[in-house]
Length: 173
Length: 274
Image (cartoon, rainbow over all chains, first blue to last red; front, top):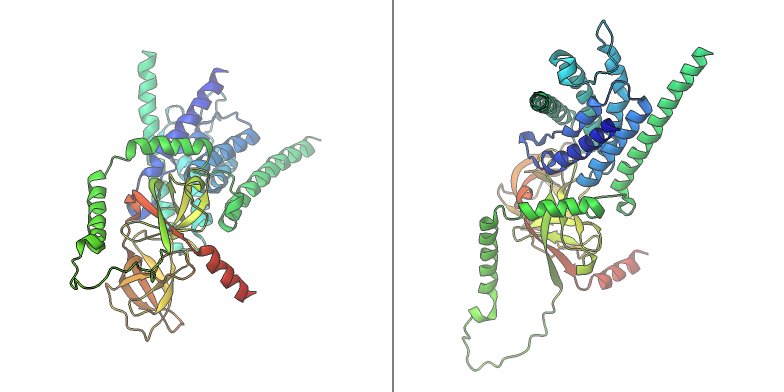
């Protein structure tokens, strides 16, 4: 029960952060930061695939309602949720995953996180931009947007976890 | 048996993915075609109250700059008003002017939110049906052309800006030659004009304005200055690139154009086309 409340608070917090802060950033080259994808990564290892997809879809749809993108975020978030189990299987450590762990920076380490997050976000943004811009822009332009957006998003979701981890440790003490 | 069960499990996951993905793509693509079946956007419900709350904090940014622009616009208007003129011929009688009848009125609104980096960029404004805004009306500000109204709710409207696909607005050169405005999706500081024959003389820096057809925009609203001039591939046309006069990142106030004889104009055009 406590974990469910915790994840609901995460959900609301990430939607607020995305719509109030990251959607309003105007970055050079017009690339974007999909900070809310952090939620899809940090759901526990034992989350059923179906539930994962439904939650990701709901999250994307909420973001869409706030940013006038009509289903684009929902579609991309759903794709990310669908490849997450496969991604985790690819990078499974030799000893396997501990079911009590969560796929976060503090529990899985920087190396694992960079690999998994980068590929996941790259797939997310490829889907997002190809779908969003395919009718009006060239390949080179879409490619550069995918690349820059992915790099900045991965950097930010890792940074956010570093900040949160520190806070958690202080609370324990 | 084990195998069959695992196949079914995979099938179920796949089915849910296809269903949800289908729904998302349906929403995305239909919203581009028929704005009437949009499920939710920033003019409605809880999403709108978020936007409104955000605006209550951000509206004070850049107020000085905005006031200066308004002052300038007022000064221009004041210079045109009758009190700024003196009568040269004292014998001439005052005649009520029946030659001019007002054709456009404007509904002033405040911008709650805007974007510039998406494939379709919208402005949410605090005027809606209650203030007389209707779908398809033109939108300008004191600098120039912004776009048109895409969706209206009771108190709010969503404006599709020039930075959107299929924006297709009639624009014309100072010499009257007209073309079609498009956005190529890459740069918020560049919009394109197609359909101007390349035997027309075009100079860099020339101001392109609206053509004023269809009763959506008045004639002569500034759109942008010609920034680059190329030959369109395989056509006898120019490929013009404009720098818009409006900075879409910092639009604070807008005016929705209300053509007072729009119904009459539409009825006339429809009767000929049928």
